[in-house]
Length: 248
Length: 364
Ligand SMILES: Cc1ncc(C[n+]2csc(CCOP(=O)(O)OP(=O)(O)O)c2C)c(N)n1
Ligand code: SF4
Ligand SMILES: [Mg+2]
Image 1 (cartoon, each protein chain N blue to C red):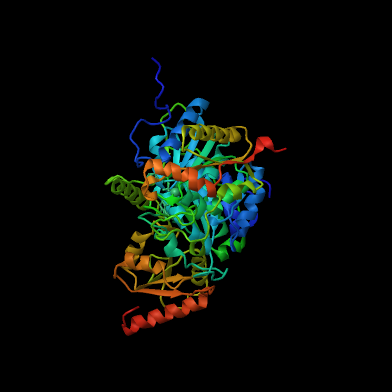
Image 2: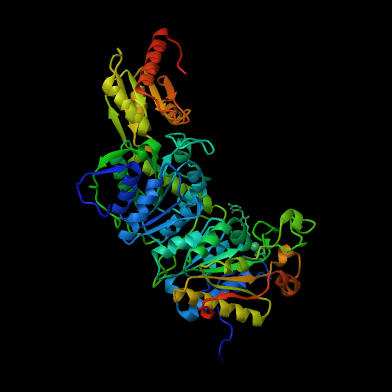
């Protein structure tokens, strides 16, 4: 009999600290599968963010580096410049990437740094118990927007892919979700494309993944997936925003 | 400048000497953001790094610079950044992470006047920030304080070796005067980039167990254990790496403690002015952390008084007082906001100390 579900070699077989229904575990599993399939475990270096995914280095069996909150793109730059032949990716949440680390992500993209960024947008600060994120939707309730995010006081959800796609240095920019097996397969393909972009030395790639945080959305897992499909993806439309293969 | 020859004399600013020495010491990754009075470091690196196959990036902020340094250090390379005042303040979170992840790097800090935007004139008001941590947590950077352009170059070499040896950030603490003045300098120290094996570095886990660079210890008890390890390392550094220069301290009645630019002025004073009927000596700390506490304690047992001279409102003097522990009076003379103590002012202060002594009044 053939095993149809097995743990990827690069994924360490240990319980994670993620809550039930959390998207981080799915995304990290996809990364491990891709590393196995591309056979790049020995030459991949990952950056873990400050956020719920901080312990990603306990789950992925590759060289990994922690970075200060928001700074993974700069740390990744420092590593990639030393080892241009290695595959360097940063894994970041929305607070990390789109609030405190906005300058770093824009300038890393603008330098055309040949790294891959995996951006997990769960519209909330998970690790610090559910405050507003730069990607929190209008009217979405969080600990710090108890009556819902108001554009007047809190501004608007920040669309990172749209911003980065107009930067000359970026090469592959896409947004996806993990709400269904179909979307998970699509996400995996886009992540592969991100790694391929780097391996072929095309430059900066970023894949944004709309991901559930049922705990701080105060929803069931099923409701969370529905929320992404029906609400979140209205503000954050899925798709490919920039692709070096379709540019002349 | 396209290369350097051994034992040849070059006329360089302190800033250029630091930059060139870093290259000679095997540093190939430099990240910086312009701020006066250290801009010549960037300019020099922008020219020289491409010549030696190295990386120079003018970054978007000092935060990016220190975090790129963090990355290159984690990847096993010799790496450096530099800044002054406001820029060094921005780097503090990163320096704390570097210390917490035990990553070697060199940070050149050419002090300017503060607080706030202050000005671009020489200052020593960032002593506390440099030697007491500056960022969060129980950590230390090794802090080296050159007194001349030649010594700046030499200490940059040593800084890279010390950083690699102890897996710890090392800071070169200069000031606008040292950074901008020109002096002859020779680059005759040996480059030893492979002195210490970096088997902890991130290189891709090809055929080995993975390496992790981190400073996060969420499991109860782990962080305390890690801090104990750090403190053990700091004790070893304190025991083995203290450096200072002493002048005429054997028979001195009064000993001045001063570093960097202030120590140069005090040396001038010692050379010129011996019209006093007391003998004056000088201790010049070269390592500010670890601080030369033992020698200061020793002299405090036999001198009439110690005078600390700084371009600050009184920062290093606190470490002098801790070393002295009340064994003799400790006086302070300082200027701030771009004011530089003059030999004349030092003479005046010493005359006051002597008369205070005669009157038997308690020193302040
Ligand atoms: C400089 C700094 N500020 C604040 C924090 C506290 N902090 C830790 S994680 C986090 C937010 C994380 O949110 P996000 O990046 O969206 O990741 P998630 O947990 O949602 O995956 C904050 C504010 C910190 N560690 N460092
Ligand atoms: S708080 Fe949210 S993001 Fe964090 S682990 Fe739980 S579900 Fe995932
Ligand atoms: Mg988040």
